[in-house]
Length: 126
Figure (cartoon, rainbow, N blue to C red):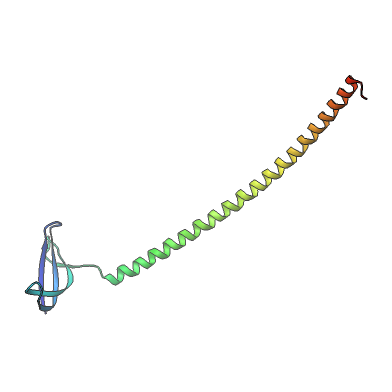
């Protein structure tokens, strides 16, 4: 088992790989290696610092989705409660409004009939 190092200039980091297999690339006509990342070299101590496991990242991702789902579920429940409260308020408002309009229409009818009777008296029809 052999190891190889690769320096990344952009982030000033040296990565350490385990060489799994060496093979000849027919298209590029040069040797290639299949490698597995082990970690990166700490610039202060010079020790290899292992990179995080992909499996742990996937598990963490599913936990994040669970939390996201639960928070979305709570938001939906709150929204449904608010909608129910608004519907109740609207129905109360509409019932008050309809009773007000009914009283107002009665008042208008009484005034019209009074005006009509006065007009009849003035014109001499009644």
